[in-house]
Amino acid sequence: MSASESNLFPLVGLQAVANAHNEWVAVTLHVPQSSTVPLMTALVAALAAADAYAFLAPLDCIVPLADPHGVDEAVLAQLAPQRTIFRLPATFAGDKQIQKKCQQWRDAGYRIIVDGPGAGPVTAALVEARALAVDAAGKLPGLHQLLPLPGPHLAYNIVDAEQLAAVQELGASWFAGDYALHHARQQSEPEDATSRRRVLALLGLLARDADAHELEVPLKQDPSLSYHLLKLVNSAAFGFTAPITSFSQAITLLGRRQLQRWLQLLLYARQQDDGKIHALLPLAAVRAAQMEALCQLRGGDRDAQDLAFMAGVFSLLDVLLGMPMEDIIATLNLAPEVSAALLERNGELGALLALVESGAPPPDGLRRAGIDGETYWRSLLQAYQWAIQVSRNL
Image (cartoon, rainbow, N blue to C red; front, side):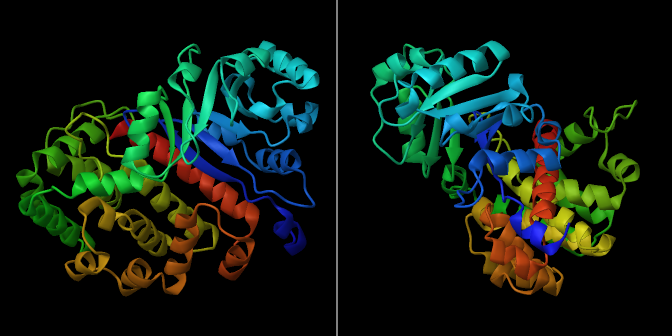
């Protein structure tokens, strides 16, 4: 891809949609508005560059439609009907042409969610929709607007636990927004000091490549981590025929490099009291995997990829543990470039981490990092694919 073509490649963003158990059920594809490239044209270009549906399987893909008139045969040819949900502004519900389109979409297997002020059972019926989308940052509709429709109803732009509770009470069962970060921080605050020291001790051992016997000590003191490790290695993802019953077996069969990575992620796998998976687990997996993918695509060797992965997975430890990153770094023996990335976003790893955690990096940021738009898009899809697998195996 030439430099000029790279600059034109659309920076499509992905936002995970979770259910009440923090399990991912869908992703929303966000295409930035452009004065020169129509939104649907940009989406088609991104989908044509890589098989996004294969990377994101089995999740549904939600496509917000700023103007549904732009959805033509060329657009539909890039979409998988049974896994695509159109998020349609309620203002178009009265448009006869759009009503006809919606009927055709429904007949072909697409689903429709009506979004925005005025959305309700009446507008939903006009466009063959069975669910509503609610902007949690705006005025919430009445309960009577959601109850007559089967759903699942989507609430987005949720920023905290209070908003999450409000939209749940309203009847929404799919959720998107930054609430996971804030909610996870609130959940981690009551964690006792003994458990925190144990987790940090394990992190320190992992960072300095401790041997198996040293790693067994904190693991044996934390039944939850031990349980999740054995559950992981006995999962279908690894396909071992004989059951793995000890930590030493896990080391032998997985190898130290893979084991170290899985243990880093297992720190986020602690079940909540209500049985939900930790909301930070898939987020940490996305960051780690995308950091590694970008490092590899830029020519980084295996050791460099390991450091990139570590920077990504450790970038949420302050949220997980409810303590400043400076205090966490002080207890770990990390490589200087990883510490610089985590503390100040400095160096090459720090620049990559800033891009990854932004979700939708500006074109100038990508250019400064020497990454073209298509490379970033492919790394994002790879990261989501791995995070989906991780969430289902831990």
